[in-house]
Image (tube, rainbow, N blue to C red; front, top):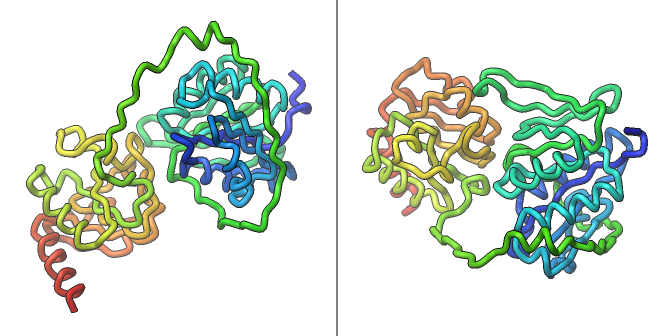
Length: 336
């Protein structure tokens, strides 16, 4: 393989129901940094159905060019049609770097593409950088989060990586940026597509905001103990307004919280303005998912708990006693 033929940083822009996902904008921001270091362009690969009118919006978030694949076959996400479409783009345009969000869709699509392209894929990256010889450095947790492994793909192209939502920061939106939109026509292999079809879609509306998008998170750990005590966290979140309740893995394993509320290496990476770590000791796996929060408030009975090493404000005490007092105080202050 002549890797000199490959250039530019490409980002798979994930959309659901025509709505561009936040992780795609985060990746465009990171791609902008990488491309500037390499002296190359950022290209957004935007597949879907009836999404053409949104293509120009991607320039504001860092893209120089958008490859728009607007086709009825892409109305709903199914592995085969999306894999065919993106594979065609990669083999035609030859990107040096290809980034995908590590969502349920990205984790399905990424491995399928890397297998067809016979290139490597580094999954769940938490850091991306460029080496002195212009190779992509892909860093991800290994051995249960006890060490960080930096991986390179020196012999094959594109260099592929999936990146967890909430890890990278979006660039500041610049509506003055302009670029080029190119519409890509895909000749789908109908026989392969028809092997799997979507029969019916059920949307579950829990009335909850994605914790990776929340500005304030009230997160509970083993020290909170049970579902009844988590109701105290719900009360605090309600007083704070626009806050969401999340948890450590221990509470998910105990059946107290659902997995979509889990923060940490095996859950979601979050970056809220304020993060309440209540009854959370601060295992490295949990810290990996929240240590980039703007302001961290920790409450724990153990004054030597690791969570205090990353906290901006720490309180040594029983979270189950402190949370009701805090909630009451905030209610009184807000009434003034």
